[in-house]
Image 1 (cartoon, one colour):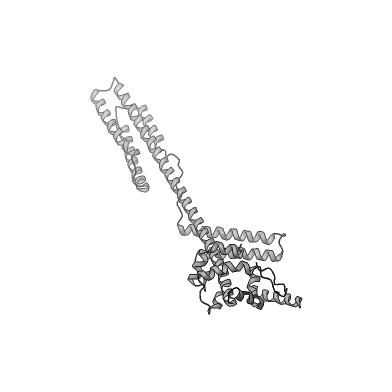
Image 2: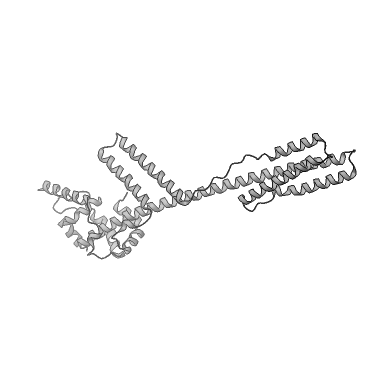
Length: 335
């Protein structure tokens, strides 16, 4: 008799495992309230220690699957009534609380993933901003060096003109006036820039125009010796060579980043599944269970943080479960 009861119990559990009564199958029951949930939390630990008065083996009631199977046990139903429960109502709460805890767990996991993505995006944005700032600083340093070199050359030319005993005073005056104007015009090289692209175009155009004008004035000046002209023009050529800088990296859009991260997650999950499949240390049952868990995780990532999986649970129940989530996880021994 005892053996047949055990076999029957396992048959019942196998049916339950293959398909628990969902929340939508209990539509005749109304939503539970906070008092009922508190009573459920208080009584659940007591009921997990229940033993059959007739000594029948019922399994470990700490297992939610075994506890769910007790809805077919008349002795257990009688014990529930003795503790102030209607059996149908108790198992309504059990099914809804279990479903709600699973849904809340998925929602929180998805939220953590979203927060991690947001942190990564913020960190990436900070890195991009730092690279842009470094690029601007390098460009400004290049401009400062170019301006300093030009002014040094102009000062050297002024010194040569002033110390030339063979040059007519009027010629000296004209050359010095020209060099003074050139020194003032050189200030634009390191002037602050309003925007990168606009300032870059303006800078290049002005620099090119100034260099052409200055080169021409050097070439046409009959009072500058040929060798000095060559030295000045060669110096201008060296100063015109751009300093090698790191170009800024274009920041991807949020949609591109999300797609890239989704693809990385997909590749990671596929890699984990391949490792599990090739691991000889797992039994077939363990291998299938781990793979299903990885696939479920992949589906949760795609779904995001929505609550679509909570179909059938009233909002008041979802709110109560979310509020008491930590207590319920501990109570139901959810992993």
